[in-house]
Image (cartoon, rainbow, N blue to C red; front, side):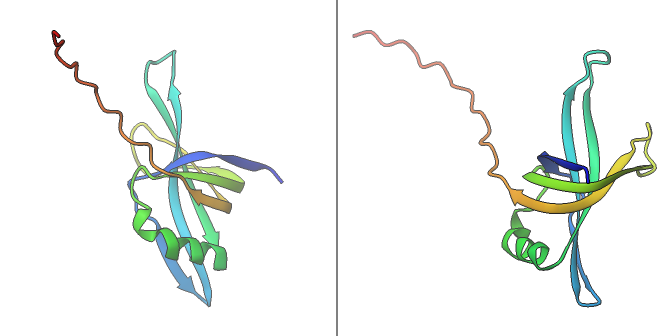
Length: 123
């Protein structure tokens, strides 16, 4: 069984939580920032649409629902990833779909603040 583990960011698409047939399910769209492609000069990203079911998913949702906003960093362990055609966008971007084994919310990094130069003082 192939596993993928790493830091991802929550996309702009809100997570969806459903409870059907007595099983809680959480679906999230995660983004992997791959960095700048030196050949094209563009930042590359990869989308992951993942599902998590069961009591652990429900407990995670109950604890972190308010914190799951666009850009939230998450450490994820994923399995059964498969490539699928993505949403109808141009250029077409495939998305990976899989299942969550474990998910942990990471702290957001504080935005860097430009340090203003303080005027020199004479003593």
